[in-house]
Length: 345
Image 1 (cartoon, rainbow, N blue to C red):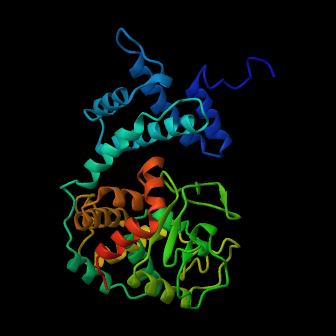
Image 2 (tube, rainbow, N blue to C red):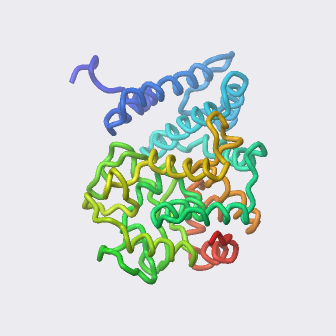
Image 3 (spheres, one colour):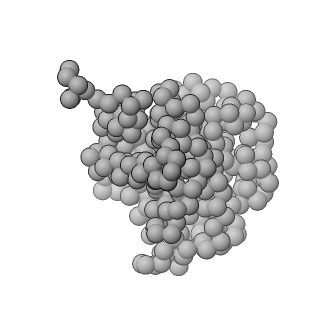
């Protein structure tokens, strides 16, 4: 292969190397272009001033200053998107051994804290949310809503769940599909993997959504959610995928894996009927699947007083913290969750 066509070496042009790998992983040209725009903008920022800094040696203060500078000309959602792309770049280059560490980890944790405590969102109490859930009667819709509210997972992560990711102590009427080895000895638990990504094949099926958590996470199920899942499994249609998705459509796309759009429409319909959603309402007013993640974070954190446990359950913590909570699964995580999770039925 000639030097003109050879891919860039990671040490020579880490951004070019990463962009090539983005393409090799099957991401769209649009995704690659957005990564390139963000990363080259960051590179230009580092080159300004009298002491230019190579991307590979950028510090967390360089990253914080860059993100802070975006706030004057971009919306908070755009700033968060830029930060997440920068974080994924550093995480990947660290994983392949080109960079020594990810300077965006601390920046993202601080951003999560500020986003989680956003005071402009609609404030909904547990009794008010309980009344809302009481209006959702269809087994699938109630299972979806309750899973989002009691686990804090994203809509895409919920859609990517397979039957093997759900370990119920009392299985009830469900297909005889073995659970993941990671769930052995962990009854009444859900396993949310970090691996599924849009367009990639996971468990024999191409996925339409990506999981966005930093590490694999095992989430306890309380009695309410376990019973609700068993009720759903009792009427779950035969599926069209060997992956055996946990949540499938019972309407026009009968038996097909739910998509994030289906989940959003489901939640929007019930929120609109309840007076919690209007066209043009914005994030400060409308209740969406992402609002359920905010609800979970706010109420469980207030009840436990332990940000670490909540971050673990959300999948927002680094490997060393994950290891701590993984080793303490039988005590700190499960006991804290079961003692503090709110009742919604």
